Image (cartoon, rainbow, N blue to C red):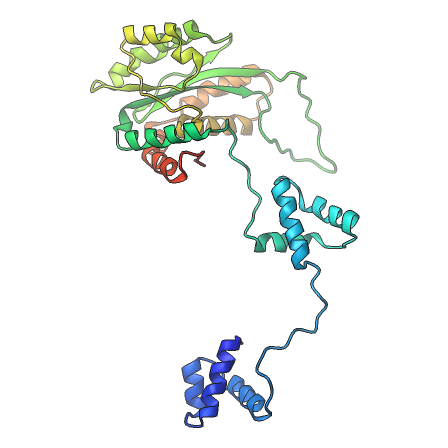
Length: 324
């Protein structure tokens, strides 16, 4: 029982004007507790809670400070390594479970970091300004585009086996497929597989072959093109081509793949291909085409309709990376 509650019961009992049943009801304690406090007061004993008789804690205040310093210095360090370092450097035999409990009490947890290029303070301000400006635009009229590479045997693969870990033979230089795609609230265009070095001229040919021929049909009420600030997108050749072919481009902040909803779709596509376990790069290409055709507008709308929320998260984070 809390010390404050003990003191309250004791004070009410010493008044001698309150019955034991009323003390139970008023303090919200059991009848046995009131009798215990009564016996303690009658014997003139101290109500202060006695220190436990168990062994002293191994995780002292100084050790907790040392643990916190280790976690700040190396956020990737494992609990096993921390226990080993305490054993070697300080001769302390602290279990991994004790270390885990102490880390949890610090309100720390190990999570996968958000990968991507760092954002400078200047770009953070640009991100916030951009989010405030574009938060309420008509995102359903934006066509999101991006390039992506998919490797054979990509991702963390698990295989059923008996005994030890199985062996998966892969080429020394893993082959990959480079693709270009676009999504919008009204669907996709055919995905484009790129089997050569991608430059501004090739990019403009893709826009002409795949995008411009369908965008006006899907969006008779007007549309805008989203693309990142890659050099092939912003070169003089590409800009002149888009102006000639009515490619209306929305401005996009630097280093912001977390804002582009098509990045989430790449993750879905890669997972579906990995689950099907292709054995050759040709099978990867075939799966890219077949899986891309399954992406319906209702499914894509989950990604494209998230832009307002993404802008809110950018504003709330002060322009830093968002986990979306």
